[in-house]
Amino acid sequence: MRNIILVLLLMLFSSNSYSSNVLAQCTLLENINGYTPILASDKIESFKWLAFSDGRVLATGTNSTNDFENCAKIDGAGRTVLPGLIDAHGHIAALGNEMQRVKLRGVESESMAVSIIKDFADKNSDSPWVLGRGWNQVLWLDGSMPTKKTLDTLGIDRPVVLNRIDDHAIWVNSKALALAGIKKSTPDPEGGKIVRDSFGEATGILIDTAMALVAQKIPPPSLMEREAALDKAFTHLLTMGIVSVHDAGVNQNGLDAYKERNKNGELPIRVYAMLDGSSAKINQWLKAGTSEDDNDFLSIRSVKIYADGALGSRGAALLKPYSDDVDNKGLLILKTRDLEKSVQNILAKGFQVNVHAIGDRANRLVLDSIEKAFTNVGGRNLRNRIEHAQVVSLEDIPRFKKLDLIASMQPLHATSDKNMAGDRLGKQRLKGAYAWQKFIQQGTVVASGSDFPVELSNVFHGLHAAVTRQDQNNHPPAGWLPSERLTPQQALRSFTLDAAFAAHQEANLGSLEKGKWADFILVDQDIINGDPKNIWKTQVLETWIAGELRFKQ
Image 1 (cartoon, rainbow, N blue to C red):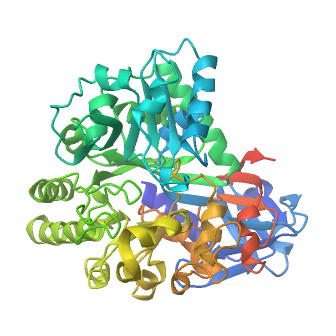
Image 2 (image 1 turned 45 degrees about the horizontal axis):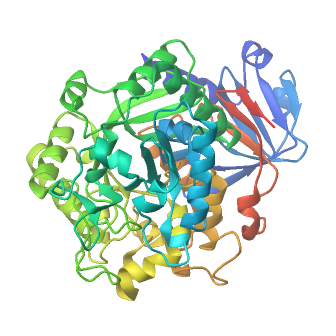
């Protein structure tokens, strides 16, 4: 039924004449500087006006608006209009939680971090646990991992658990270690590491699967707390001009919340939910099958699994040892046979498989596993994705195209990592790292995201990083690994139409073409033809979803 309706709408909207009934209900946004990618080409099309009705685009153009004289008119005052932004990899609940916990993003020393933690604990004395995230030892003067000792000196008689910015390590106090039963004799779990001192004692840093030893002891948030976190996240995302998020790893609580809100028409943005492949419920979810709604607000047809950890905590799985840690090749979250089994199981049930892989070894194992699964169960047409595809051997990059895989990448990771990636990888491996342009030039679709709250949920920061390969202080002057820069047109497409393609939604989302949902934003500067150095400063003035104003500055 949905397809029949879409065909009829497209037939109607492709006509040069419009019925008086449609025009009576339509809106004409005029006097604008508009840009949209085009599905059938690589072009970015410019327009001066946008007409929409019943939530969908009627037309855009640069010429006469005589056909729309009966429409309600809005003066765009010369502002720039873009398709609503799609973040192809984010974590909505985690964003909402971060907004209510200890915030350590950008903190420049361990001592400064503990001061913030102490202040938060004192102001939230009723909370049985002190939770937070965002620390990054790479920003600290000596670059060393923090320890439980500095937390223990704060006199907080409660467990303290602080996630690293990449969410692949936690920093905890002795109280948390004791509650988790972590002792000198506790073995490292498969795919994880308990960092120890020279005496074999846990230092307070747990990496990847070892984090679960503590995390499973944290009391789950109440329904009210979960809903409040979602409300905060949704409200914030709308201010960023984000109309759709590919939520990378949704658990049962998240799934229930999205379904309930969607049923009641209360999802304020579109959600492409990747089911958490590590959940005990995964087979139950796969058996239930995929689902989508007619209004494209909730789509459940993909599964997220992990192959390795992250580069910053040296958990990314590498083919050769880390250049700055010669006894370490990183961690595999799943054994090879378990990875192969999981990929095959997901594809056999008709779900898209989206695998987190950062290191070159992890990426190769994922490529091998997907290739083997295609032979055994098929699924090539499901637009499968490698999430991050951050460090890839040069000989493996062409395999993305060969296997019809999507590279789901995050431009901000390049500018965030540029000061440590060379230390971790050495010069040779950098040739296949953050290689956006190499993927695009071979015809691989690059769907861009932010990985919020690992990075800030500001797509314009990502667009700036993609186009300049610089941080917001314009460093380095020529850009970091500048041959991988994207053009503004490529970058916009990766955060709109190509992100929609990665979710099987390009027929309805990602561009302002006739018949598609009227998801668009008004911003305060021209990101296509303006100064690339200023892209990150862009402010979202309005966010519209399905022709409805959802945010106004």
